[in-house]
Image 1 (tube, rainbow, N blue to C red):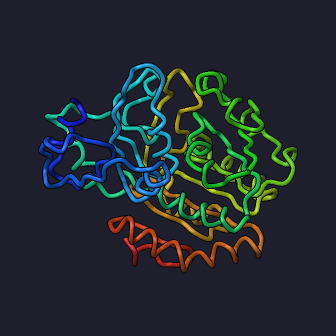
Image 2 (cartoon, rainbow, N blue to C red; image 1 turned 135 degrees about the horizontal axis):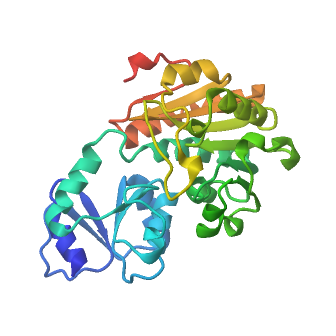
Length: 326
């Protein structure tokens, strides 16, 4: 009955309800009953939503619907479970632990109403999915892969791609079973990794990792990746954002915690596309003329899709003037 109680509590957002529910049970007018839906239909609906409301039928393990939602760019508002709670902080990694019914409506309203709270992943998914559909990405280097967030998020949209992960902290490798999730995993400090030994790479990802090193080290890492990959994706806080070590991991410290958008733009050459969401900037660098052309062509597709699905986003592309689009 927790599902019914939660649905009856939400009044501040439209909720599309999949699955069978007793028609005699009264739900708020904000609920749209879809009824039983096929797997494909469910995935299509997840692509259109910002927030997936999930109920765990058990405490052990995890519910696969959470990860289907993440792969479609939706954050999951879910019960906890032994897997989701193991080594994780609430409200991180795209999984947000659901408040009790009496506070649930307020939680949903705050999440939906806060610009950038849920949407950064959607922009990245749209952009890389389009590149993947054009068969431009076959090998991905995930630098500083942590818990494997980008592998989980982008993997379904880059079918057939080979994934190479680099992670320095062995406890993360063990806790998140990274060796099982990557085609090749290297336990090494990203700052000393020889990217050229991995052979041709189409996309290098540095997701929320460059702030964990000095500016000169970050510049060196990106420059070496740019020498082997036509596409380099950077996700980085663009506000002052201090952080100490977490879970006993000294590599979680933010060494340079004061990046801003303009410094990123000046520091890393070849930025062709970028998104700004709240305190995070996502930047796509291209290192060949063909890659630049491919991304430039997406400027006719992605902004319209982003604005349609995320009308309140702060977003800018390539040569656009940032201040004109915030």
